[in-house]
Image (cartoon, rainbow, N blue to C red; front, side, top):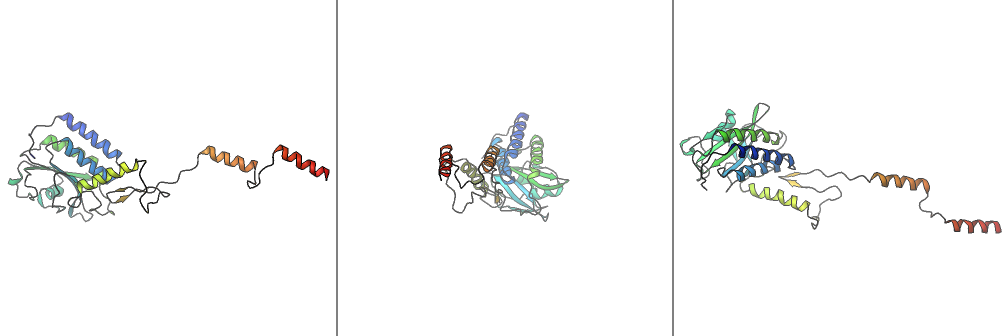
Length: 266
């Protein structure tokens, strides 16, 4: 889809950056946070036709597609570092802005509608751990304001990187073709289910141990059982002291007098 090329007002970048920051902070996990972030970029800026995040795999040799959103899935779910524009950005650690992808021999053809591209590395502790990839359907759709903005977004995304002991792949929304929107929709559906009073437990779901919410393949840890209110605890202690034998019902005043009279008469 073609969009009029117009310079984005600085205020729009500031507002979008604040929204991304708040959304990441409120998300239930890295997978949801990353998916929401790419959706915000895609929705707020019409020239961002396709937005995705690639993460460097534990071997440090490949980029693996993570969360993404756009008209269709890309076939490039794994890119060797140093290959293509994305691989070049990962190797150099520098932002790449391509005004016309047809003139760049490094470009890995994917969408016929793509005319321009911007790739922004995600840094953590001095090394590249991932990158933001944005395609545009217009020539020269991106400039230095986009680069500065996306570099700040990249800094917010850095804490979402997979740990070295975590697999980089299908657990991330969109890491396989066709999963971008679907996994994001599943996350939102499960959130709606959590607040639905009419929701019936799924067979086998352990509500005693805590409800489990799946987020891009991860499980939320079971909630701990609630302790009884302090007032109830104190009442229980008082009853135990007052009536140490709860199985025996204490006699009323009238009952005690009658029992005493019978013992004297006997």
